Amino acid sequence: MGRHLARVLRVSLTFLSCFSFFLLTGCETVRNFMARDLEDEDFIIGQLYADEHVDEVPVIGQRVEVKPKAGECQNALGLKCGEGENKNLYETVNSWLGVPYLYGGTTRAGIDCSAFVGAVYKEVYGVVLHRTANDMLRDVELITRAQLREGDLLFFTNSKGKVSHVGIYLKDGLFAHSSTSNGVSVSRVDGGYWEKHFYKGGRVKK
Image (cartoon, rainbow, N blue to C red):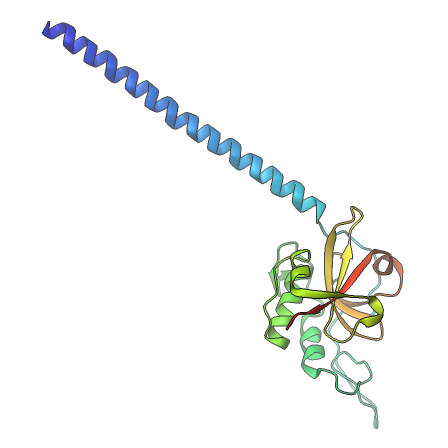
C-alpha cells in the first residue's frame, strides 16, 4: 500500500511538473508572439506615418554668420528684420542649422522633424508639444496657408496621405524644419514637394 501510494505521488508530481512547464513555456510563447505582433503593428503604423526623403536645395542649410552692411537690419538667419519679430526664434533656429536628420533622434547629434519643432518651441515659447507630427495636430487650431504667421506650425502629408512632417513658419514663405535630405534647414513652402504635400497650418493653442 505504501509503495503504491508513493508511486501515485511520483506520477502526480511528474504530471504537475510537466503541466507547469507547459504552462510557463506556453505563456512565454504567447507573450513572445504578442510582442512580435505588437512590434509588427508598430512597424506598419510607423511606415504609414513615415517621413519621406525629399531631394531639395534648401534656402538656408548651414549656420549663418550675420555681417549686416551699414544701415541694414538682419536677424540671426540673415533675413531682413521684421517689425515685432521674435529675435529668439531666429537665433534658436540658427543654432540648430546643419544638425543631421535622424529618425527618432532628439539631440544635436541627430534629430527628426517633430523633435526639432518640439525643442524649438520649448526653448523659445516655453511650450511642450506632443512628440510626433501627427499628434501635434492636437496642440493646434488648424489654419490655412494664407493665415500663417511667425511661429505657426506647418503640417505635410506623405505619399500615403498621412501627416508625416512638421515645421515652424518664419516669414515670407520660409519655414524651418528637419528634412530627411538636409537635416535642420530652412525651405520654401510655396513650391515643389512642400507646396504639393502641404496639409494645414496650425496655431498652437494657448
